[in-house]
Amino acid sequence: MPYDTDNVFAKILRGEIPCETIYEDEFAIAFDDINPQSPVHVLVLPKGEYVSMDDFTANASDAEIAGFFRAVGAVARQLDVVGSGYRILANHGRDAHQEVPHFHMHIFAGRDVGPMIRPPRP
Ligand code: 5GP
Image (tube, protein in one colour):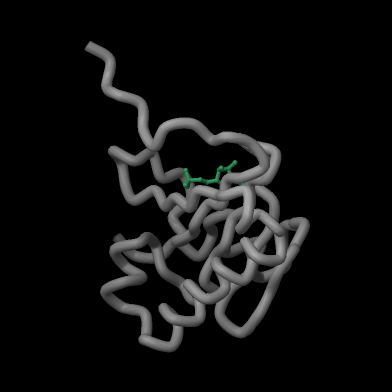
């Protein structure tokens, strides 16, 4: 799947759509999710144009991958949720309901976020 330069996160990265940036470095940017699912719900994006987890891990440089994951850890420390705990999550593709085709990781925290995944309905 080719990268869609009109996706909403591409527009945020270009400054065409506003966001509440809470962290930025050479490799990544982080901002609050517009529709939070927990008291803390932050999205961390690599700055490079990668559609998904698959695209990122197949095509990003070692420096981009290391920089991105270091940024996720740094954002969690900045949010002061390391002690209480947090969940990181990345949706890839249809079955995971990925909505925005620019790779990103969610950080959920600020409450007990429950079991890892709900069992399927019978
Ligand atoms: P996905 O399902 O792709 O993993 O999650 C996409 C996330 O992006 C959703 O949680 C959604 O609320 C968030 N989102 C979509 N559009 C915007 C936007 O314009 N601004 C912000 N801050 N978050 C957005």
